[in-house]
Every structure is written in structure tokens, then in C-alpha cells.
Image (tube, rainbow, N blue to C red; front, top):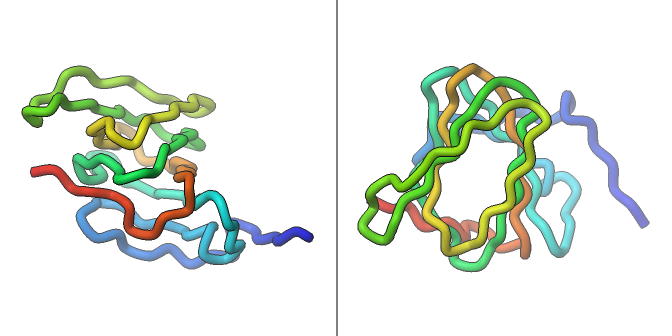
Length: 123
């Protein structure tokens, strides 16, 4: 069994707590063990500083330029990783992070396991 969808056929939706629009690939395909989506950002946009309750997240930059910032338990930023098209990053659930857009683009994000609204916004 398989499911198929083309990204061009998906409608983008606004995201609460983020300066982004998301194409919910997972909503269309209904995978049981992962939650894929494509996030679109304008330059200067960002997602929330957050961590996940149980989801490990994979980020794959499709276009544009991004920073993935990490923070300590005190909420202070500890480092920022520069990302460009072709880069992949896997982040553990408990790592506090924020995706920031430097140059308009898209990021393919996969969370696993497939847990709805697993993110916890910090600050």
C-alpha cells in the first residue's frame, strides 16, 4: 500500500506562533509513524523557540538560507547552526531550538513518532 501527493497540489496554511506557512504533507498522506510537512518562510521569519514532548525532528533545507538556534535550560541561546539547501539536521525532542529564515525558502520537516501538537513553546 502507498499514498501519493504532489507538493504543488497542497494549500499552505498559517502556523500559530510562527512567521511561516506550512503544507501539511502528513495530513494528506496519513503516515502512522511520522509527521512530515513543508514550512515556507520569508526572510526574517522564524518558528517559535520550542522543544518537543516526544518527537525527534529531521530538518531538510529545500531552498533559501536558515539558522537553527539552540538554547540552554535558562532559555539563553547557546549556538546557531547555519543551514543551506541540501543540509539535513536531526534534533532530539528535549533540545530547545528555533528555526530562523535568513533568505526566503522552504524546509522539509519530519517529526517522529506521529504526535499531534507535540511542540512546547518556550518563553
